[in-house]
Length: 619
Image (cartoon, rainbow, N blue to C red; front, side, top):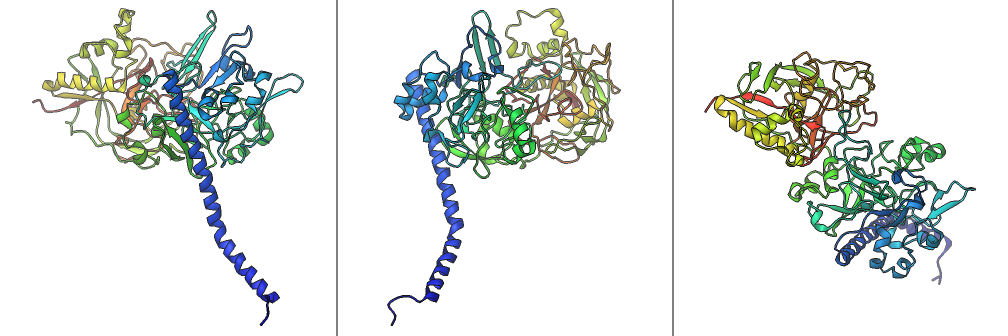
């Protein structure tokens, strides 16, 4: 018997081993990916522990970043290109002592910006706890290189993969107006005399703004503290830079439904607004950025908006305030995504939200109300509110304005209003609200600054909840007269705005000189609020449907909801309410942003309401 193997036997053994290896390879790759995912989750869990240790010491959570003016200059610090000169410590640097990096933390020189030479070793340090191994761009050979504008000198930063939740508010710095109410807005404090600067939204941390636990309404198990960021794919891409306290670098910001980065890993070509993206477009091109999963716009030249991104299949890992870490799917309902990032969301509102609304396409229809009698009009109620009859009819709900294209995830759809309805001719005035409720909207306080003319204007700065309470109170008052009240559905509101017709509106972005129409939505320059019914009515006798205040609707908001053809009333549940101000939801908005939508517990100085009157048998 031979002591060894013949050549053909060796080949056979090698062949068998090759087949075995080929069969095992997918499993090996799968477990390697799983191992990287586990390490990424462990990093987020460790950051959560460090966050709570910081809170125990300081009785507050850290700010997202500390910014100071550079030299004598003071102005909009968020617009400065030399972010290395205004950015000081950020949340990661503040957490270093609680991550077993005491020696590195000791290198920090208070009062000196991150770009100072004394901080070079710190900002170039690659820390495993701040790096997700699934991101192959998060490596020492791919630093962020910020140009100083002098002799091609650059300031380099190591990459990182985790961000603190700065919030899902609107990232626009323009103030709300009748042109665009902006939905949930952020707060900017900028005082040239005191040189005070602070910026914060609805997240867990702001710029020069810390929050204590008792400032959070949202529950610890439903409020996101940290989430993933992808490292920049090019030396001029600032995203994923752990020691730089900037939006997109170590802070997510403005990534809710009031912006165009309203879900994780959002592929929309305009999703992120970061410094240097014009160069990214020049070097890589818009489509290449989209293909790589790192889109951004080339016309915003400062860090303003960035969503969570990762290299994991299907979603991003987030750490909630209570320390739990989980993967949220890319197709999570944008309303849930928005609410999970807001410290102001009532905790009970989100009970079971992640499981029930993980996907954006699963909805049940809002149930219809109690049957009402056949309306006749016009009607004037006991408070002097006038209602006009809107006829039944068919139209295309969500039809784009003339010359505009439909939005991919919010396409127009056939709609039929099967019964005529009575809609208030004018918006509810502040005087009418006070007469029915016996008080002013809570946001107005005691109203000491109000003048008589304010009570003739639309009742604004009230929450959806307050508008709903008004309907209930007015119903109680008028039930003996056979009338009850509710907010209009979005379909009813849009049909009335379109004057019961089915044709596209010819929108103009700039108001013609001496325009008497009162149209304000999406039109510049912005108009001031004025007395209800100051401008001519539409063909149905309705005032201010495209002007004056924007208006709450009954429906829960969803970008992707497609309901029945007959009398759609929106999803049965949700986290934000619909606000409308013109015939098309995206009027004047090329970025396809749902600017005005808001949670029912928030108010806005340019959002009011009008109501529907239903006839019922008297008791």
